[in-house]
Image (spheres, one colour):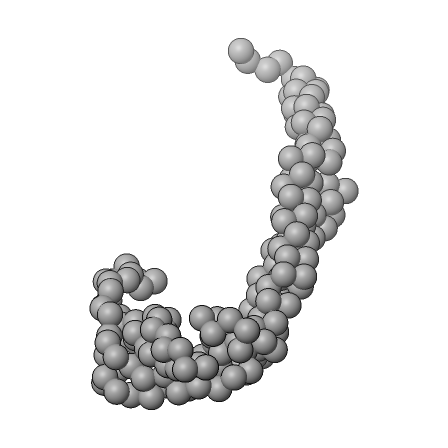
Length: 174
């Protein structure tokens, strides 16, 4: 089809621009899917943060409070096992089987202190035991800053992702 005049060509360009601007205008409404995804991240982050604050951290401090009896456990055996690292590499690690005495009662249990090398048998390891339940023990009564920061930082990061995604989607839509 051959155009007969400049006027027809201008009209055709005008119509094409009008159609494109109407199509762009339809995109400017709020994308409800993005808002829902953002709110899901926000809600999951809030739920995780509440779980950490009301379950994980109190459990950590509870063990440090009740395990008050210091005992010397003696390593009687190293139990090998295989695990996978973050790189997908198989690594051999060792759990120590320890033995200690509380109230003239000899207790043998696995000390879950993942070592890459076996600990020599007869090595003494300090444990803190719950006097009411001598099978309940911890390796350290100290709560490090990293033990608190990491469980709190992860849900906060998820919440921030949801909030920032929501803010940028709402700004983009305007």
